[in-house]
Image 1 (cartoon, rainbow, N blue to C red):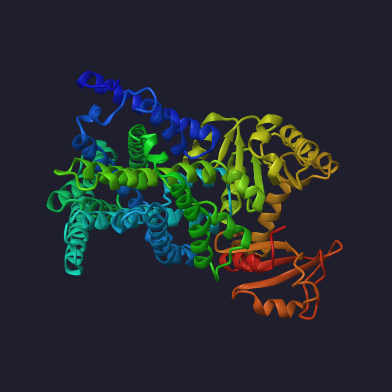
Image 2: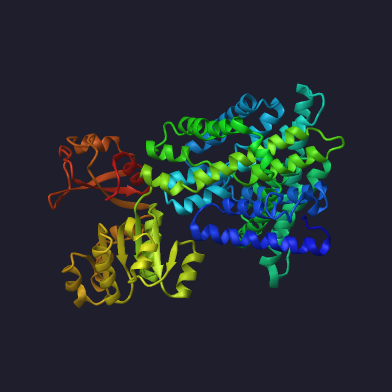
Length: 627
């Protein structure tokens, strides 16, 4: 029985929001994309479940179309707002190919699969192909929180998701408008494209300029400036969408994307507050919309696809995705295993689902209905791909990554004080996967607010260490101000988890012997301070350079395990290294020496690289893993 009436509708909205929040909490708890829980919640209250939600609950198709449209505007604006030009420039070259050549392969290949396996008309097939370009940050980001892959891999997947979310929505808008025109010629299509995209760009630029000018030059209340900045930006997203959509139907998505892209790169005041606020709003809107859309999904639409629908899913997941990833990443420094991982992690999310449902409602509620059968095919195919990719690729991403061995081993730092925090900053600047353990609530909150991955708990508790990933940790650093705690942490890391490298901070110099008796690498706070002061006095240039380690300069040690390096002379390897990096030391059998050009490397040797941070990282990728 569906819910109707103003009072009941309010209760229904409250239930949907509550289920959305619970889904987000379950996502964080079990570390899988929230889309999976949102779909389950939506189906549970929809016609296929308890039957408390239907299209009529929102006053019919037009009411739901308006809600979904505004929600899409906010979601697209949010994605574009986080699409930083600098980030795109710094992203691997593969990102550009993934979002151009790769997107084209996904569009054409998916459309051909839908046309061939489901015998769909080309207009519906191309529309489905355009929507399923988008992987989207709403499903990719939760996966990367669970699977801490290399920065290069994470940046590629995240940037691809953000860019394709926006481009897929705009492409789908143009194709949708084209399919609703009875007689379509090349001239008419170009006119439709120019009208929608041109209007969206113009409105987006104008709205973004007004919002920027107001934030920059108008005193928007000193007492509540951050709050007003957040509200003004949110209003800009909605106004851009509504104004453009009023001029030309379906132009609003392009306007929201344009406004978001410009404002996100405009160096706004209170930008961090705006981003955090919009992220929360988008999360709430996303939860509401996805539950609502899933509730309106009828299983008959999925079952009607039959084996043809299964074939489309197989083509999208196991043919098109690997093909476009391997073609796009050729020539970049991705390992084969990392390329395979990216091939198997391309779940679809909120943009395909919400836009597909929006278009389906408009097709069904048009007078006369434009293409009811096509609307069912559109929703059924898109949701089937979303369901399967989220469950398989999202739910099993961790297992896929472990099987392919693409998860770098973690560094655990126990103690989030000044020492632990400073160390974490340096390690993360080098691309390490760092987890801090801190039992002080205030310090923990500060760490998390500054973007660190921090777990609450006592570092001497085995369960806390295990929950933070001690079993997969390459290095454990005991950096608290209590030597007893550091000693116990070191013992647990060695005896319980077999950690390869355990480093402890000795606050009292007289305790150094106790640590070293356990074969623990020990850093005496007093001696380190004295050594640093001595360097400033005797070696000021080196001291200044060392203080920038991990930022402008870096020193890294790697072990010679690659057969291609064994037997090679230092001069031969050095000539092939990136500009700005040198082989400073070769360590063999416990001895260290500054190598001459003719020194031949042996298996098991350790090479110390010194130079610019980016050059050192590039050299590591050429030669092997850090020690």
